[in-house]
Image 1 (cartoon, rainbow, N blue to C red):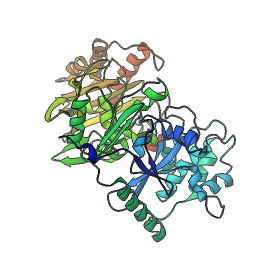
Image 2 (image 1 turned 45 degrees about the vertical axis):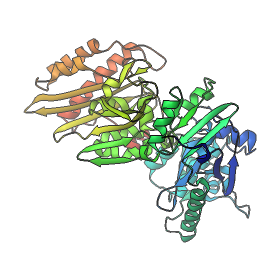
Image 3 (image 1 turned 45 degrees about the horizontal axis):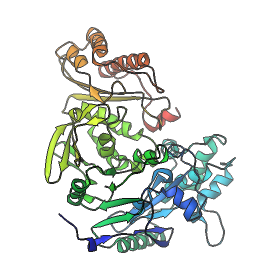
Image 4 (image 1 turned 180 degrees about the horizontal axis):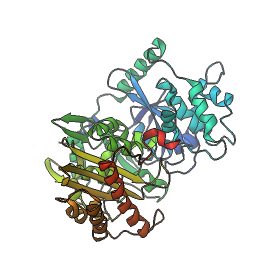
Length: 497
């Protein structure tokens, strides 16, 4: 499929607050943060880490929800590329200012609870609180912690800020003025984007394409097989901000509608490669509760609102959080090149460190996840230095079926133990067909040393990784034999229990 040049659009159109903006000849990998501070001269948004970790640069993005209204989410401006704003509304701390000069309720709540000291992190906190306010507010401590986990403060302490979240409240979803505002904004954004099949920027410093269908995406990747595929930018953004890479061309999949669907049929969940962690969270939690909790601990809310399940797989990181869990569930992926599709087991996709079973011009189209059968227990454990928003040292996922005291099925997958996420097949073989008791547990633990030879790095030593992996088998054994014993801090409550 070839799209006529006349049908392409070469300007980025978005709302900055309520003002319409159209930008041409902009560097495709300019970050939203740099545009705000250096071009728009809106310096309320701060630069901290430059890698989506500290939250000082938090802004709110609004986009049509497909139902005539809007949905709003927080993202990190430091790793969000400007062209990804096309068809969206960008809100920064400056937009909370009222015509009468009064503080917004979330700002007033921060003042009233003394939620700011040095103030550098405050705009980011305010924008996270503002998104909560737009969603109707929150009083649950765990939910507030989850919303603020991506905003770091080193002087105030979180108590006053959490209290500010409670005090600020939120706007009612039934408020007629707010409903009308969202309907109007949605209509304006839809009109701005028009019916052009693709955003295509050709600038002196690089090219950027944003197709709207997987057919157009497939054609683009055949024509540009060495292009950088951009989804949420939570990994690719760091290539620019930390590694100072030049990416040309960039092909963005965030506008490909048929890659953003989640559907369940016949006990099988199919997740498009462009589905964000946030949008996949509930569906994966229904597959298995531990998968839902695992996804909740990927990065921060800002990261989960941007990062995608497909991207987590396609980049092939040995410490990616979703692959071990999906491998243990027996997931498969669909790869596409041009009009040719092929399906492979996820565990076979990872060949060796930095290499996946994906040809030039081929892309991950979807992930197929079977629901565990009745009687099968699924457990997943993430070990990291911080409970929330931290890189994994070791991740273990187990799918086990025990009948009449014997292990009839067992899949064990690990991240952080090798150059790729992979199954522990020696460990599996040691227990299948055996009584599920302490003797077979010991055999499984011993077999791990034949499955893996982990490395030492800044996150953990090889000795620590092996010991942790073996101990997680013990945790699995306890949880599947004496489930009444408490073995972990669960869910959003874990951050403050």
